[in-house]
Length: 194
Image (tube, rainbow, N blue to C red; front, side, top):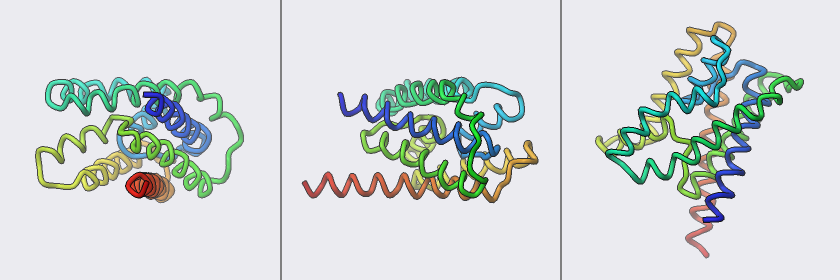
């Protein structure tokens, strides 16, 4: 239980700092529900964390009725990470690194946060939850669904926000995926060998 609490706290902090310190100042987009929360921030001035919670509610209702384990493993990660994203918003006013460095550093921090939570079987919810449910119904790998959803969100963001640079957002998403993969692979291997 203590490991899960620490994983949620540390992982959510990494995600929130990455978003506020590197993504928001450069108008970078992430994929999934986080990306939709950022689009709402850039276009309507809404709080991204609150938007993430609201957009995730229908998915959690479905999970409650169909996949209760997914519901429990994602709810606290979703709520805490979303609250910290809005809590750390003052970081977005600090002078940040150039956009290329920000896309790599932001992707690394977000991927680290997500990886830490996934090792403890916790997710930040959102479209990861949707991808898990879709892969359970179909024969496609969850990673394919995540890639498709992330691509659609970034494409939508590029259409809506002309200043959002698709290339740098794509680098960010690749960095998130690579970092998450490395962390989850390392700790799964490390756990098996001990």
